[in-house]
Amino acid sequence: MHIPFQGTITAADLMASDPLFVFALESEAADVFDDVDKLVVGIGKLNAAFHLSKAILARRPRVVVNLGSAGSGTFPRGSLVSCERFIQRDMDVRGLGFRRYETPLSGLDPILSYGLRLEGLDSGICGTGDSFEMAHDSTEYNVIDMEAYALAFVCCRERIPFVCVKFISDGADGGAADDWTVQVHRTALTFKRLLQG
Image (cartoon, rainbow, N blue to C red; front, side, top):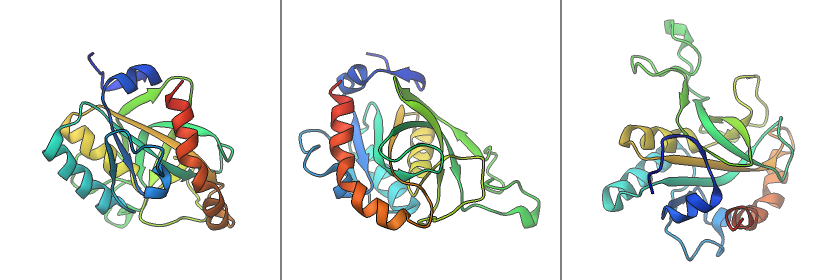
């Protein structure tokens, strides 16, 4: 089966494509994903890029699927959001004349548009950064995490189809840390139900 780089994919087609599932934390996968090709990369953009690059060199997956928890002030807690656009939210070199979120001299647009939307889910724009952000002033992204931009960037450069689905665990506000701690255990089971159709 040919997997496109953009557009929509069903859960059944995704599962039939022998995906590599990527999680930041073991707690997001729990033991629910022990029967699939799984990679746990750790927290943050550097860990995500490093470990996914190593996995791609070792086994060249047909498609990479990032499943993880995220915050949002737009989508309700407990919902699933498919992200196909990504912003590196802690890149800010406006002082040198670059646009907010633009990586200087890279030739890249501040918004990385790369990935497939999982059918039946709302679409979001994921702002990735190396901080557990409690509040944000940006209206350019509506989902907040710490790894997805790096994973999407590596897949884009390697020309590997990418799917990113986030479980909204908190409101990306002052109660985010407490909410995340309570909700993260629901992540794996929610993803498994989604992918089993």
